[in-house]
Structure formats: structure tokens, C-alpha cells
Image 1 (cartoon, one colour):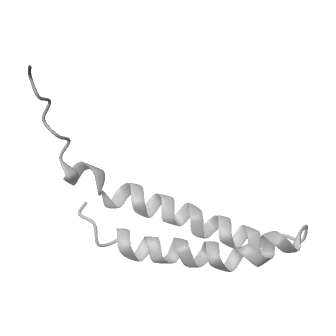
Image 2: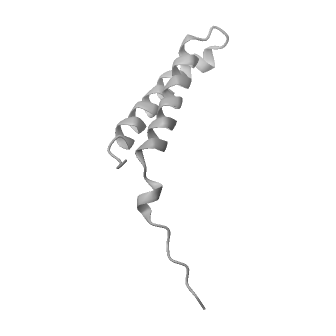
Image 3: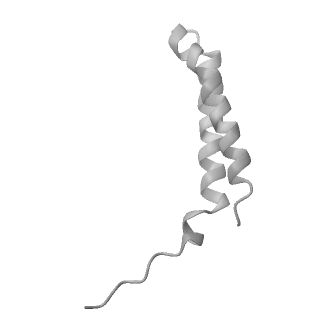
Length: 64
């Protein structure tokens, strides 16, 4: 029985994907902040921006 080699962890943690997703999350939070339709989206805009900013800081330390 052959055992498949494990996928290297280096491929999973790349700066390109994390920074892109974090930027999209920050943009979504800003859009939620400036929309005039519902207070619920406005209420959740700051936590979304905060999570996106923290994720960007973390993923910016990943290798290229």
C-alpha cells in the first residue's frame, strides 16, 4: 500500500491569497459602513473592517 506524501504546508500559506481576501473583506466593510439601507449592516461594518485589517497584518508576514 502506497502512502501519498502530505501536501507541503508552504503552499497553503501564501501572501497573495491572504492579502487579496483581506482586501476584499476590508472593502466589504467600508461598503457596509456607507450604505444607507439598514442599520444592521452599519452595525457590523466595524467588526468586518477590523477582522479584515487584522487578517491583512497576519498574512503580510507570510512568504511570497
